[in-house]
Length: 113
Image 1 (cartoon, rainbow, N blue to C red):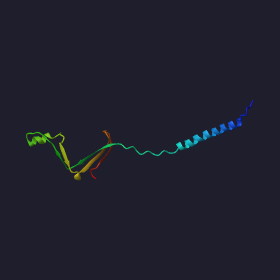
Image 2: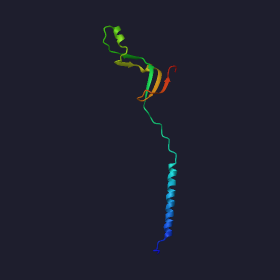
Image 3: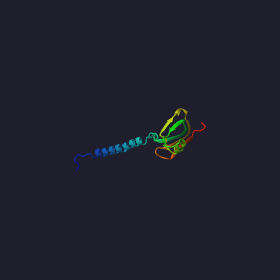
């Protein structure tokens, strides 16, 4: 016995819902397919060592009996002070390392420039 339900309306509603749900993902897919912007290259820390001829005065402090003995004792010692003049420097070689590493990433000889 039919109590007044109109099954045609319910079927029409179901078809409209199916159309709406199938159309929505296509729109979302079209937005997702858009080209992503290229990311900038990452920035890394590097250690740069430049070997150069530099007019500098190295100061050592040595306890010795004679000046000749003092001159012999400074070999292999680290200086106490370094006074340099950057204006007169001449670069010989430049080496770039990854920060904290000993692996050479780039090297350039600067002699003959």
